[in-house]
Length: 152
Ligand code: DQA
Image 1 (tube, rainbow, N blue to C red):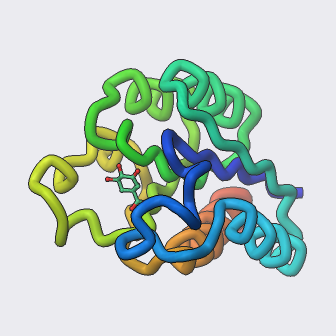
Image 2 (cartoon, rainbow, N blue to C red; image 1 turned 180 degrees about the vertical axis):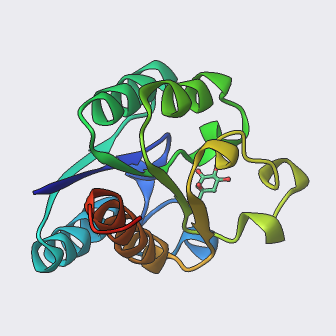
Image 3 (cartoon, rainbow, N blue to C red; image 1 turned 45 degrees about the horizontal axis):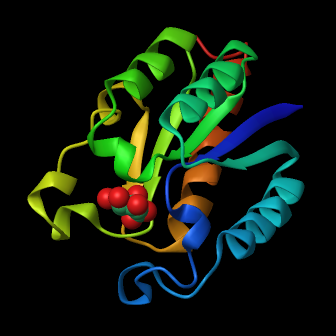
């Protein structure tokens, strides 16, 4: 069974009450519930985690990558700052998709840069919780393609 780890970075535990004009009213528990339902339909074994600590997020990425699981990651503010996170994705060989609730390109200039995007298969942002749903679908398809031995 395909395994995907959904990894959430700092302050995403505050979703629902955090700057609702930007991030909306859905809580992280709402997002997890919907993704679990989607994963069930897709036949994916889903792990869902959140941490406010950079080192812990690095550990989560390593764990997923070394186990051969896909990584759907909203690294939140660490997206824009963390070389360690970038190195964890690259070093563990994780197949990763970066997601953001908000359209980071329509916001402050410091949010336009992602240190992890170059080591991710793709980036989805600006669709609210739907960014996660689209990301899960994309990652599941990529992983299915990777394990399909009939492909050249
Ligand atoms: C975010 C965008 C980041 O710039 C910000 O630091 C976050 C959330 C998003 O999902 O829109 O914490 O990753």
